[in-house]
Amino acid sequence: MDRITKAPRLMIVSDLDHTMVDHHDPENMSLLRFNALWESNYRHDSLLVFSTGRSPTLYKQLRKEKPMLTPDITIMSVGTEITYGSSMLLDDGWVKILNQKWDRNVVIEETSKSPELTLQAETEQRPHKVSFYVDKTKAQVVMKELSSRLEKRGLDVKLIYSGGMDLDVLPQGAGKGQALSYLLNKLKTEGTLPVNTLACGDSGNDAELFSIPDVYGVMVSNAQEELLQWHAENAKGNPNIIHAKERCAAGIIEAIGHFNLGSNTSPRDVADFVECKLDHVNPGYEVVKFYLFYERWRRGEAANCETYIASLKASCDPTATFVFPTGVEKTLHECIYAMKGCYGDQKGKQFRVWVDRVLSTPIGLNTWLVKFDKWELSGDERCCCVTTAKINAKGSGGASDGYTWVSVQQKWLEGYEKKDTSIWLF
Image (tube, rainbow, N blue to C red; front, side):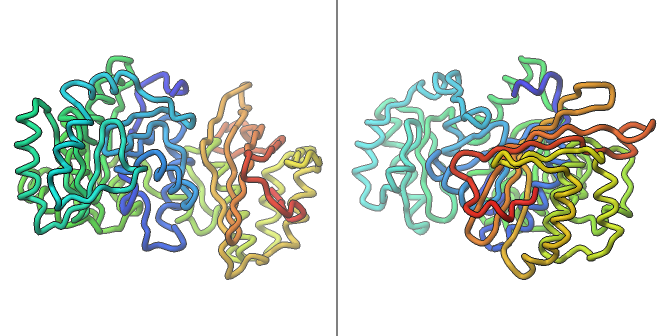
């Protein structure tokens, strides 16, 4: 959050399961497309917020399963926990608000009187959230009775039913919508209220996100009936909320374009980087482009021709160095030469490369220090290097002429070291 010193250009607040993450997409292409778009065009001046019903335990589990970016802010457990940064620092102010008129022990006592309710796993039970499964044919009756009993006990609670089976009991002041409202007020107080905010969801517990004033909303194409019904009853005709034609993260990209919130062309949708010329390029775009080409080369999806190799060499200073995680140092030109011999060696295999947390800092008139996490998935093995690169803007035209790589240094992210380092090229 320290990197945001002025109003963010865009803040995306997205649900995870079946919104940002498509569990029916084994290649994770819509998610990878969004990743490339965000890191190349938005990370440097915008905020990414994940708002999920998952507990911290299940959220961290999902991060190990899917190629997800690191958000600036994470809202978990249906809006009852707000954390910041990769260290997930808890917002104590939000905790104090939720403690009002809330007694978890009373909730447990009263819900135990309803045999229709089945407690969810212990990992999903949180300080300000008690979660159950309930058959949807009985949900409305159970919720009405439970709400009355808890009110008589002096509690002010909110019952949220979603997914056709999940029932969450929360403090009245909790929920995804209230958490977002709290966050926007906090950012406004700090003088960093986003210029635009886009909320994204697919189920009933996301409805609150679309009720916040001055927030754009997208229901992805695969949105559940409960959310579509809410929209028909409460927001039909609202031009700031759309039902996307695309699924999951692809629907988010669609919404960015629909509302003219910025570029919605993912680098993964660019077929030829050599031919593609952009007016506004930043160091993040250069990093994404470099590693996307590397992925395509290894997968045999880029043409095996000298034009591409020459272009890659031209983007590197002749004396540019690359320090591997093992400590071995080579020139970047040597690395490119080694890469030539690996063309198509991952063709037809599960091999993907993406970058996360791209942060560029100017250290000279036309020089940037760029730090990022470089991830590589090969089969079942997922590896990550914390990477620091130094790049210069080309020519007198500045960044519009592209960049030259001067040096790259990597070290393994703990727990994600590669077993066979002989084929770690970049």
